[in-house]
Length: 398
Image 1 (cartoon, one colour):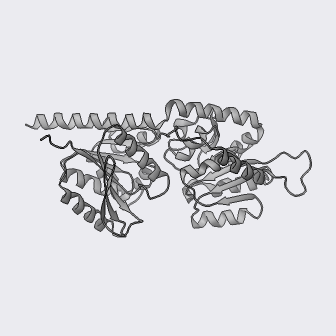
Image 2 (cartoon, helix red, strand yellow):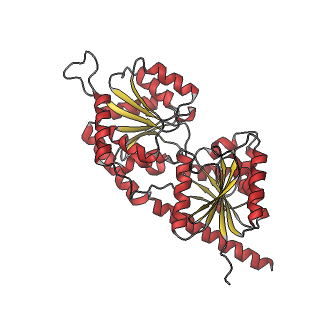
Image 3 (cartoon, helix red, strand yellow):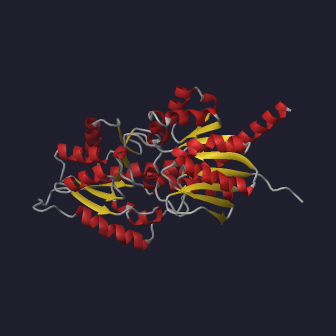
């Protein structure tokens, strides 16, 4: 009887049915690797399911442990379930977040498997400056056979700060293009939404231009810079030059700013929407705004560009890896209100055909270099390299 091939253990806080960009990316990468024949058990610390359970998935199982304010307890309970299964693992992957980074080194040592630490979103930025988390980040890097970032900027920061250039690499996010096109019904919905956003303002002259529609999409936390964007438009006196479509959750401070801004700006709100639901929203936009103070490689950026919509974005994280200023969108220095106003002025100076040309260039770039297939193959190659290195090391030890 042939022994079962070793599996990969994928430790994460972000996986469906959780929502948001981190969960979406985790699902995409795991699905891509499973489609290539890798068996992956997802060890998921869930905020939605109140009990421990093991779910059989195609291409691997899912061990779920409920989220706990006591992270040590959640990790310990998850470990007990994994240990009880008695499986052999070729790799342990810590997929970002506080608890996977904290638990990954121990799980990898106990399973006698190499650790791959993935820093996602703002994991590195938040972790290295946190007195409580900085040592966990350092340990997760030190114990890792490989460290992966989603931006060249994070790769450089990580390598310089922790002296780990020899094992750190940049693997960009990707987008699955095969199902990323709006249906006629979605186009009709977006057209009605656009008409609402571009309707003439009260008292508008016949020659007053229609407002440019900016989109803010996702989980709008303070780090996303939405408040700075809204204030920049107000400070410049462009209240009638822009309309805003805001889709998603907002934290308390951002929500207060949105409500205040709605008194002087045209702001249309929609609740948080899953990726597929956004196809009825994106076509209503002229430009997608990403004025983040720090970020990874936002799925929203890739989604917008794949639909031919240019972005107005801070040159931070993985954004400059994808968008070149003046070629696929409008970039500005992060955190600088004057630079943001200058970028907004360039948006206004361009007419609709010029913005469409930027969007078309963005679509071409994403299609050529940022697909889910390329992303999956990059991770598969990394897994193979780490496994080969681990086998050589064990051979040397013998």
